[in-house]
Length: 183
Image (cartoon, rainbow, N blue to C red):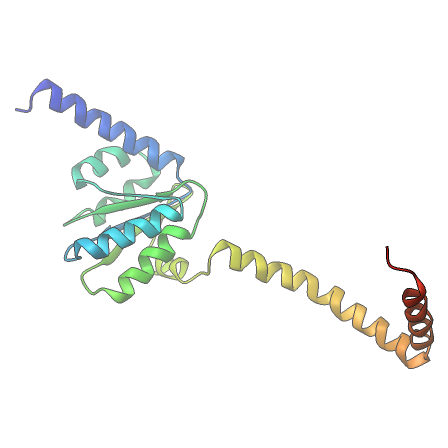
């Protein structure tokens, strides 16, 4: 039987893990066996830089933390070695980084995951892993918003150029700019 001190420590770990799951918008469970220390160090660095918390955790502690919650569906993947990656504000960072790493390493596999306290299957997790970063997605959306305005501006410019009104106005403005003395 474990000592009182060990039992209290494990209860605290379960409570911390439960709070971590509740505060996360997304999480991924992976089977990490067979990776080198150097690879693990590099992976942890990349996850840390993306704001993802990554820890190796005992399956029993995970089971106790998700018991009776919406994440209880993850119980079926709690076999072998398990590491947990959670993110409080980025839905794709953990899945993207760990998915990329799993593609390169045969011994490293995605086991399961969740989004907004809802368990997702492996197929959804893998498609989430293939999404680009938040910055790339925002740039794509902004580009899509900007495209109609840019096309409209080109059409207006073409109409103005066709009517010949833009050319004289540009020529008149150029000499005026040259005549202004430099200060």
